Image (cartoon, rainbow over all chains, first blue to last red; front, top):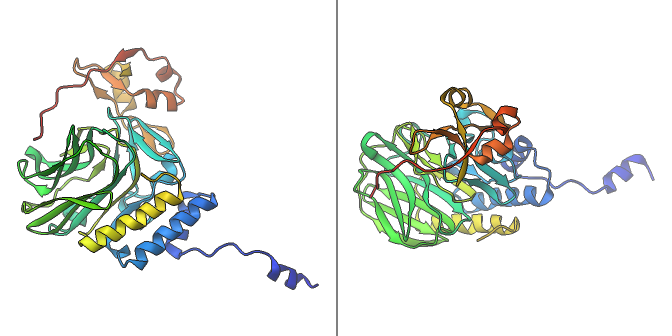
Length: 265
Length: 67
């Protein structure tokens, strides 16, 4: 048998989607399960026609700050590519990134006023911690105006997207687990999703886009960080508002991703 | 919760310093205005004097109820 025939009989490495491959290359992950999970996530999001809805997707695979920081949509190691910067006490593992609830947050470098739309924005956070406290994400201007957040407050979840301090909405649940999506799809329509279920809807109108970057694991109070959270993060995203069907499909894709990594809630 | 206590000069030194690849110190003040960092930062860094910092109970500053 010739050399060329032997080569052609050798098993070939799977061909990944180009966007998935760029992320795999940037993070340096080598685990086949993780690589396949990322690839399938990209294919699913494209299959649902929602891939273009995202400014940033953070899969939190690989178990280190270095692999967790990359944005799947643009896996460059720059602020402009919305690569996360981990500040304070985080613990990174195969299950995601765990902020300590004391001084840990991650800067997304995504400033709504320069990157997002007033009447079309979503932010998601896949929490693996029950009974969590603080803000799993947040940003606000002086006087807590133009406030964007998801806050765990005892038996309630508080959500706001670009509103005045008193114009939050909430729903009762001490369970802070699973995929949380704060979503605005119109000037008079916001909603909150948990575990693929729409939990609350609001007609609160937005005031203006927040002019400071969105933080995960805490709240960016116009440049000062507060309301730190202890919710372990296994996925996060920021992008356009999602229709009910899109939000549901997004959850389905992310839940399949988490299941393939054996860390689903 | 136990945290590691800093003097102000140490806090200034550590602020924003990369203690491990892609992880940065974040000294904050407690309710008594003591500067502190978390045990996660202390454990994960390789700076010898940070390892020797005294440990204290963390008492957070009062925060305004947002709602």
